Each structure stands twice: as structure tokens, then as C-alpha cells.
Image (cartoon, rainbow, N blue to C red; front, side):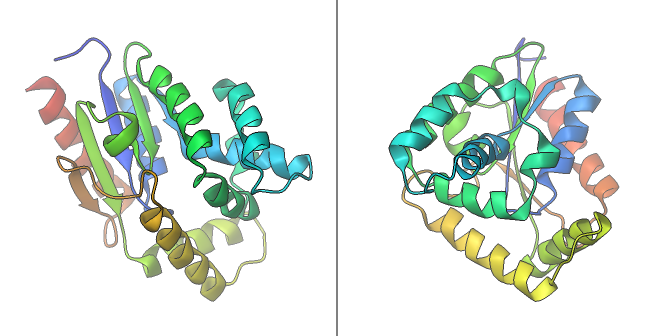
Length: 213
């Protein structure tokens, strides 16, 4: 292995499959995993719980500074309304600086780390040994999110989810600070027509090549 604590950086839009892929890669290689989106969701959730406005950057910074990455609950934070709130918090430059510092510290954990998000390969860990950009068409991503919500027994409207995903993409890709885009040397994996198994084996072959050859 080229580095004692290698980092695998995974970026991509909402519902592209990057989270599932990141978790599986972390288990496969015995690395730590961080869904960096949960850090923004954690801040947004705390603001919502305290009935604080989502445009209060000073309060958001205080929450971000106190956030414990070890207590992020994916089940709680995966709620759709928290995701929408998080995308608004994520445009705050000072909040991003605080959370990026915490994410970089996580990336140095031994024996290695897998981080997924929207600016890992470009901003958080530009020196990562492996960079993957996972994408899929908005329609496919909306279908997946629609299925996920229905499987939880919750009401879900495909058209509304598709609209939200397109709006989220526009916010993430259009923001001035750390916009969502592939890193120059990232491997692109389009999962639109892939099963999770195919995406996983494709990613493993790319990671193996980068880390072990």
C-alpha cells in the first residue's frame, strides 16, 4: 500500500448510490467511513430542533463547532426535510470551513478512511489516493429515493422527489463555495443502469489498482 492511512474520496449527487458504495468499500477494506453529508444534516437538525432559522450563520457555526461526528444518527438524519434544510446550511462558507476541518481530521484515521459527499475529492481531501465520482440520471435517482421512502412505509410522490432532486442539484452545483463537480483525476461511475453489485465490483477494481498496484 502506498500510504499507511489511505483515503478514498467519493463524490456525487443525491441518491446516486455513493453512500451505499462508500459503506461497502469501508467494510471491504476495513476502513473507517464518514458520510460527510450527515455533518451538514446534523447541524441542520440541531437548528430545526431549536426552532432556529436556517439562515442564522452565527448559530449554525456554534452548532458545527460542537458537533460530535461519532453521534451522527443516519436513521434520524436521513429524513427528507432535514436533507432539504442541510442543503441550505451547506452554502454557508464559515460552517463549511468548520466541518471541513473535522472531516479532514477524520480522513487521517488509521488504517484508512472512506469519505463520501459532494466536495471530498475537490476540497476536503484533494490529495486522496483514490477519487470516485458516482452519478446517475435525475430520473433514476428519484426512482431510488421514491422506493426508499415507500419501503419505510412513508407517503411519497415521485414527481415531487424528482423536482426536489433537480433543485438540490442546482443548489449544490451552482454554489460559489465548493460546488459539486468531479475532481480532475476522479474515476467516473454512472450507476444509472448498474446494480449495486456491479457498481461495487467496478469501484473495488479501481481502488485496488490505485492502492495496491
